[in-house]
Image (cartoon, rainbow, N blue to C red; front, side, top):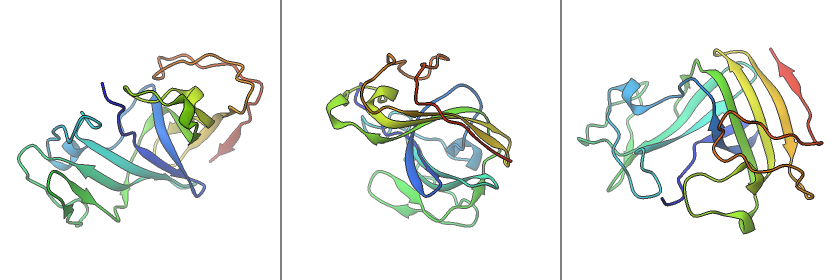
Length: 174
């Protein structure tokens, strides 16, 4: 399987890749009346999104997809910008009432790239484990600084296991 495009999260002005989640649902084309279809080998699920996590809520800001029947419906009154094989909705402000745990990462380490599925947490310098409870409450449970030496083993796609690491910090937002 080709490396897959991950969703993007904007948090405190920085962009993170979504590299895992334990439960709950984020936004999907189905909730807007559309049926996604594979865009290309790097996007088998047929869509990818950009979210913004503020101190007030989680919002869907951008959605790119390939609709099975090319039936691109407006989202929140916004029409998509259409390309040959997909369409992108820019400037969205859709509240996402997600409850669950997510793992975000940034500062990808190129030498650790794997050409299949999603990248492992150890392939990033910064990893955040977060618990979100509805649209307006979240907590950063772990802020893992992966600068060498790497003191924990890879966990792959979430799998319900968290690594132990001496560089862990937490912050609560309500």
